[in-house]
Image 1 (cartoon, rainbow, N blue to C red):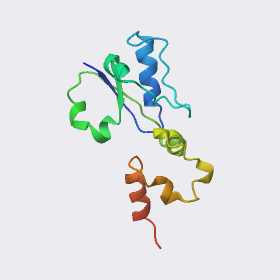
Image 2 (image 1 turned 45 degrees about the horizontal axis):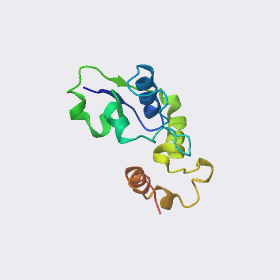
Image 3 (image 1 turned 90 degrees about the horizontal axis):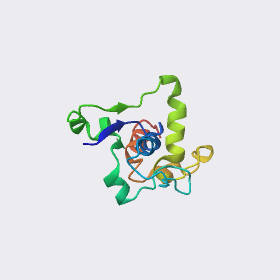
Image 4 (image 1 turned 180 degrees about the vertical axis):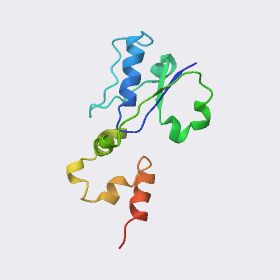
Length: 129
């Protein structure tokens, strides 16, 4: 059974997953998960089968499945880190390469994708035109 790693986007859950799987020799030390943007999202089908640690947004999307596990790792952060975590998420999450310095330019276009759909809806809901 896989050990879940629950994390919020921007807290490097996928990197921790790869690190733990390599450290405990569940996957080859030669495996390179890093894509062109430096994120650790470049995984293969073989990797998915071999890994023991499994990073997902468990609490947000798979909460009912999380209770089936006897042990888990949960990445938490202090509210003082919220801006940094959010910035990291927007900049690197899902390899979308959205630059924070230019997020104000065409914001709706940049966030109009499956990954940020909920975030975009929250922005639009609270925006007064």
